[in-house]
Length: 313
Image (cartoon, rainbow, N blue to C red):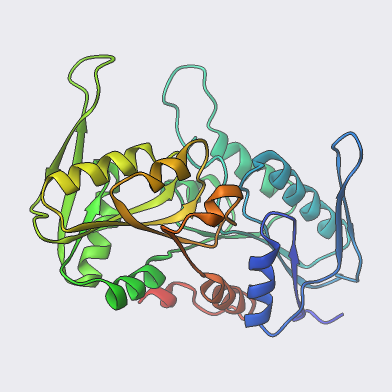
């Protein structure tokens, strides 16, 4: 088989996204059995010849994180043993990304452990989107292409909202929010959270003038949505006309959907990096934008050894 043959594989994490990506590339997903034994062990079998191919595995490590991570790891090993020329792990969502540093004694840096596992099973390149912390790229000793959902969100914001002010939900997200504000040519506000005493409720203040503006909170993910909903309430109290949120990864665990439904957030715009599950599918406030075309273009460029960073110029 020639050295320039590309193959697309997918685990069970987000098969519909993999199908969209394959469609954009005018390809079909390569045949692969992914199933479980009765005791929960995962079994993988590649059902076609991959010798000498450039193989891409599309697998966000979302809920259930450990199952999907194990699927990815075992699939990589199967491809390596089947003599794939290069294996690229496409991780639209990188599970364990929040454990990116030691925040207390005797705790792991799990994001680094995941990186070591992927390299150990033969991954030679990683493609990911909106990492929780940019320094995770440094946990790999192989090339990492880091995509951003910003172009998709910015297009949507320009088409649907007026009098926008971009809001960072905390001090740590200011760099991201500033990049959005610069592209949208609008103002920037920051929600300042502080706890004056232990066990006391956090006080929230808005730095910046949001009065009579359409406030758009930008973040990399929405998990339990507690901080997001509290921030929206603070923005409304500070005079914002309406509040929307753009969060790349809809983790939406625990009471998230219930909180969003009853909050001041008018709409929560997310990407399809993680498939919506359960009650989140029926929430009218949640709007999903597809980033499949962006990922497909990046895969095409990686395969052809073209520049990926020029996607964001």
